[in-house]
Image (cartoon, rainbow, N blue to C red; front, side):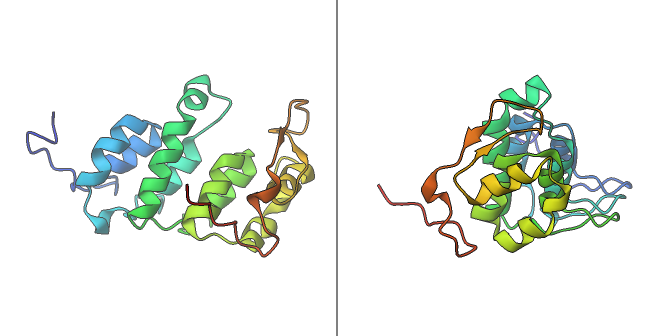
Length: 178
């Protein structure tokens, strides 16, 4: 309603935050969906006082251990895809040298890593470079092979990767057309 009434989606607060930053910081996929089309391209990668972009803020504040976040994961990943399609830089680093990939690997957010690789142009070698920060070595191996992957080292319920998700070239397989 606010956007339809002419509220400024392009406003940048003194802290550097845009409305999109705040929606991402609070992991609000419905708000991100409303704001993204109204956000000018030059603000998709706007930096706040911590030198974070909206995408980096979203990756920094998403926690699968939070039931509300876990329930919204599909919508969050859809918004990540849309942000990447609008030109969000998955390699943008904050003032601590962290980017979205670092945060996803550290948290063990497998689906978040896969979206960055498949749709954000992140290479397998970049994931492997940060694998020492992952929850476990089997977690990282599971991204690139057909092994059981746990969300945390002591989680007994892992997920199996599809054999054809990676072709070994460092690039994800192209998705087949229906």
